[in-house]
Length: 176
Image (cartoon, rainbow, N blue to C red; front, side, top):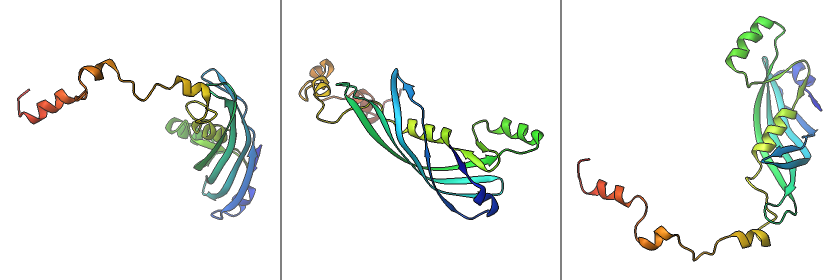
């Protein structure tokens, strides 16, 4: 869906509230399919010259499976955003010069703005490294090592840390 910004085009500088619901297609991330539901962008926008300033909050629910027990997991996403969209010029030679400068800028044309790419980017960047169903997940608790386990190198030198040799060099005033 497109966000209608015609009111901001008619009244530059005036902040206009918006509530925009969007759809993010399923994404395959690290071999796992993640779906999104209840995607909502809420905030305000205003025009300043050829730039559209959009501020607000994205809320959504990411649906995946737990990394331990494979039960379905719903992860709530809430992220603030503050973006500038640039109006595409009607003069192609000006556009070519701008494209060379910044190929990742957000653009719009006419009186409607597509927020799908913004919503997708914000949602994916807010995803956790792995989905878990909670601290009480039996499968994940069985994978956790005991708190009393020590590594072989810690048994040999329990009072030294990996950088102790460097510390000795700094404290002895030796030339290296």
